[in-house]
View 1 (cartoon, rainbow, N blue to C red):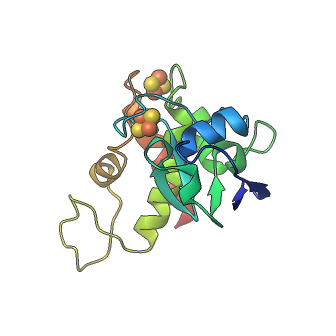
View 2 (view 1 turned 90 degrees about the vertical axis):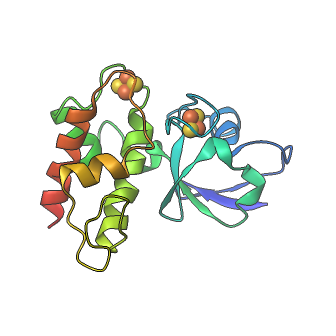
Length: 166
Ligand code: FES
Ligand code: FES
């Protein structure tokens, strides 16, 4: 079964019970994607599938026939960081860093969702323009937990990139 991971075509022919998370980490050696809870509760395993965020622990690799998957390694690397990665560094948006790949993948998709006008639970007027306030960002990132409590700096990093994209 073909799929594309960070721009490289691959073939999945493993056990159909394999989660996408285990496939990425174990079979593709893409260990930037983290296993926190393995139950869809922490967001550490967030990756992008066709540009949309998903908890890779909650989906099977075999369900992604033909999909384009982007992990943190596909967003950037230390020599050529994605703007969000650089902003997380500038704003100290992490401590241990375990949640960080998931936070950054999630933030990337979240900014795209807001740009498309998708409302969140705290959007005051779902028929109006989406304005990404800090409360909006916190709500939209609430699926990504940080045990180190770097939330305020994570939001600072995202705000910087949001303002740069205006
Ligand atoms: S490891 Fe997937 S949500 Fe926690
Ligand atoms: S930086 Fe440690 S869990 Fe978020």
